[in-house]
Image (tube, rainbow, N blue to C red; front, side, top):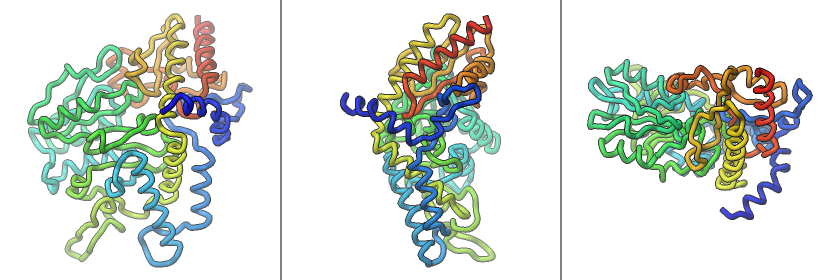
Length: 418
C-alpha cells in the first residue's frame, strides 16, 4: 500500500459514495443520512444490485439440476461466485460452504462436531472454549453443544480495555475447540489470532473464527491465519442479505457429517439408506441462494478493486477521528482499546447519566444512524457493568465529515440532557 493509493481513495470517495444512492437520502429531520451502522448491516453499491438483477433477468435457473442453458448458466455463475469469494478470503473453492448467514455457519459447525459419526466428535468430559467478548452467535451454539454432549463450556475473560485476557484461562488436553471473534463487534478489539491458534494447536483443539467484523474491513487470508473454520456474512460486506459463508479446512469438511439433509446434497439414495456428496455440496441441501451468491461475489470484487489495504487505512482514519472527537467530550466512556493498532471499525461508548437509546434518538434527529443496545453481546456488557452502549461502525463509504456530525450530535445530546 502506498500513500498515493490512500490519497486516491480520498479523491475517489465522492465517486464511491455515488455507488450507494441511499447515502444521498434526506432523513425525517431534514438532514442528509450519515450511515454509521455498517457493523450491523452495510449498504449495497449499485454494482451489487445490478449483478443480482442482471442474473435474475438473464440467467435465473436451478443450480446443479438438469441440462438446459439457464441451468448451466446459473450453475456457472454460482460456482464462479464461490471462486471469487474464496479468492477474496484466501481459501480454496472447495473449502467454502454457502449458508444463509454467519449464525447458520457457526451452528453448522456446532451441530456436526457433536455428531458421533465425526471421528473427533465432542463428548462428555471434553471442554469447549470461547471468550466473554463474543456475539451471541458465537456463544449460544457452543452452550448448546455442551448441553447436548455433556461437554463443559469455559471462556477467556476480558481486560479492562476490552481485549481478550489471555492470562484468564489455561488450556489442557481436554479442550477440543476454541471459538473466538477476529474483531469484537462491541469493543472493536482485534484478537491475537496467532497466539490463540497456537495455544489451541498445542493441545490438539480445533479453532473457529467469527470473521464478520474483519472480512469487510481489512485483508483476510484464512489459510495464513491457520484457523480450522471461519464464518462471515454477506450483508456486512456490501453484499446481499440471506447469504453467509462457512470456511472449513478441506480435510475437516470432508470428514464432517451433513447438517441439513434433502435434495442436492446426496450421492445415492435408496429406501434403506443414503450416501452423501462431497463437501461443500454435502452442506448445501435444497435450492441454493444463487442470486445472493452472485451479489456477494460482486461485493468481493468491488472491495478488491478498491484494495482491502486501502479500505483498512481509510477506516483507521475514521476510527482515529471518532476516538479523538468522542474522547474529548466530558462524560464519555469509550468501551474498547485506546490504541488504533488494537481495534477495528466499531466504536462503542456510553455517556454518563444518559441512556444509549436517548443518545441514539438525538443522533437520529440529526440524520446520524448508529446502533444502540447490547449488540447481541449481553455477557460483555455485564462485564463492564453497563446495560447498553451506542456504537458507530464505519465502512469504505464513510467520511470525516460524518465523524464530525457524530461528535457534534453526541455533544448536543450531552447539552440537552444536562
